[in-house]
Length: 136
Image 1 (cartoon, rainbow, N blue to C red):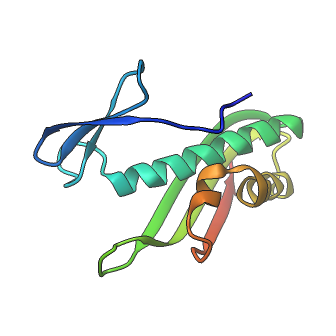
Image 2: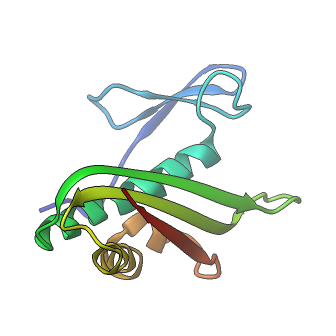
């Protein structure tokens, strides 16, 4: 069972560049200027997309879909003024697999957003989340 506590450490490198991650694992490089590495807001989008993608893979497998490929792109809209928080998320799921259809894909995505994805659930409740599905 997963712990109910997540813990990471951040170590400053130079400028706005940091190493971050849990102890004992390779660090992720984070760049506040987005010049040499992924920015904090981009990491938030990565976290939301991969959290949901993991749910969708698991749910599709339970629906007996023989998944061949899953790609997720995510666009986060941000406020112009500070704090420049995310105000909307739009996902595009591209799914290929034997037995995959739009109904199964939408059911898996809806379950992820409504019940399972802890990252999306951790974001402010007033952020609209939308998505499109493409089957290959």
